[in-house]
Every structure is written in structure tokens, then in C-alpha cells.
Image (cartoon, rainbow, N blue to C red; front, side, top):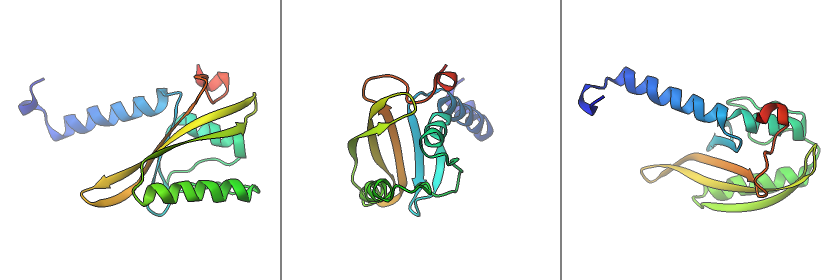
Length: 140
């Protein structure tokens, strides 16, 4: 369809469906948060991984840092989020003991900018071995 005949509602429908498809089909963990470190977007893989790791359910507009006993892990992730919110784009490789086996996760932290302002951050995490980070029933 030529650009000039697309309506705003058509664009909204297409982009909304693309986002929904992307969020539900990716095996990578995808999430984003605002400057208050509240989740504004999360795919199903991320929600399942956090639940399997912490027992906490991810909620949109809920805190990005789960309420868990591991204060060292919370402090480390809080520092990583703060770095990205200060405008730095970077990758970090972290080891976890998942339900299935130890995994090394490569996470990319990307500041979300509008003009000169940082509006939040987007994060993408993948298993450095290429395997899915979530249980087989979810990953299929």
C-alpha cells in the first residue's frame, strides 16, 4: 500500500500487531523500563525466565527489580540499570544457575532516547550458547 494512502489507524494496527508478534515469538528475553525502573514492556520469554529464576511474576508498571533474598544480585542489576539510564550502551555476560543447567547470559542495555533526554532503557538477553533460556514448553 503506498505511503500516502495509509491512515493513522492502519499504521497503529500494523505496528501494534508487529510489536505483539515480536514480543510473543522471540526466544530472547526482551524488556524495557522507564526512568523510575518500572517495567513498560516485557516479552513472554522474559516473564517466564524471571518467574523460573525468582518465583516473582513480572508486571507492567511494576518494579524491574524483583523482591528476592539475593541482595547482591539486586544491587548488581540496579547498578547496571543505573549505568544505562545515565546514557551508556553496553553488554554484560552473567552466569546463572537455571532450573535446567548453568547458563551464561549476554545482556545488552540500550538507553531509550527522545531528543537529548533518556526516557528509559531497553534490554535484550540471550544465552551465549544459543540455547533457549526458558523451559521447552514455553520455547516451542
